[in-house]
Image (tube, rainbow, N blue to C red; front, side):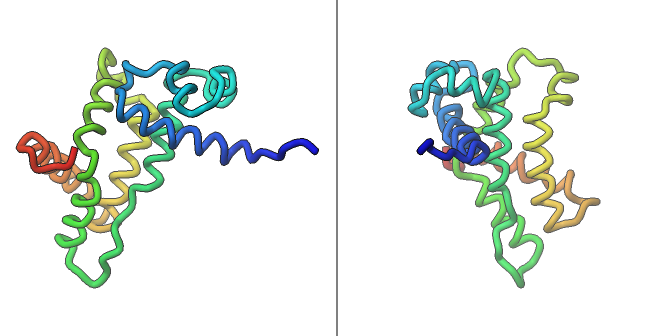
Length: 160
């Protein structure tokens, strides 16, 4: 009897597992062959699900962004909720930013603005912040949070 495979679940699992490999090695330091070896699949199997490294990166981004959510700390102020969200974003922030800048290297501002992985990432973070402060204040609040995380990272305060 042939093995029944849930291709969507398998694709999502590969993308999520590849995300940690991207984080560890950077975008430029990753090849499809290396990712396939890391994931324990053939290169052709990986290409079956992801025709390019950029497609794999996008799928990885989508899977990781599914976990961006407002921590459940009901009954507390907006400020406390924002602090909880910032704290939840802090682990790995430095390596995520390094990966992001590596991925974006050489892209123009117009290319970055049109990049689907960037749009997915920004939309997930924006939605999490908007859930706390509302749509009107979300962009400014997200900018403050990202700035705080980046400065904390530079000062050795963020987990990296």
